[in-house]
Image 1 (tube, rainbow, N blue to C red):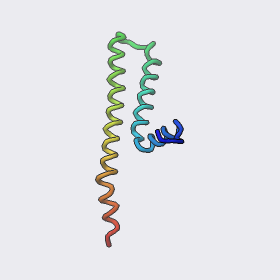
Image 2 (cartoon, one colour):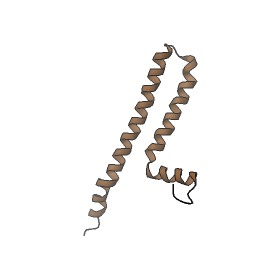
Image 3 (cartoon, rainbow, N blue to C red):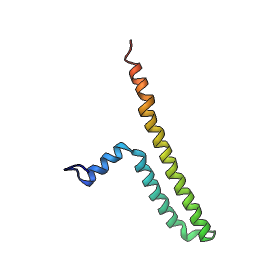
Image 4 (cartoon, rainbow, N blue to C red):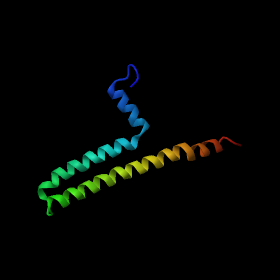
Length: 89
């Protein structure tokens, strides 16, 4: 953390640098909330229900990480080729 940077400024900077991390965390919190809400109305054993919720949450986070890596690769390798190619006449 640099001098003079508050926690909210640091969080905003990190969100700009890695937007899929924020989406992944929000989705994870949403899935956990959904799991707690539906825990009362489950029709299966507790252990099976918790395993399904864990797999769903992990799948969401892995999907967000994959999209984030693809976005960064596009931004670093593909986009510069298109932007530099349009300058030539």
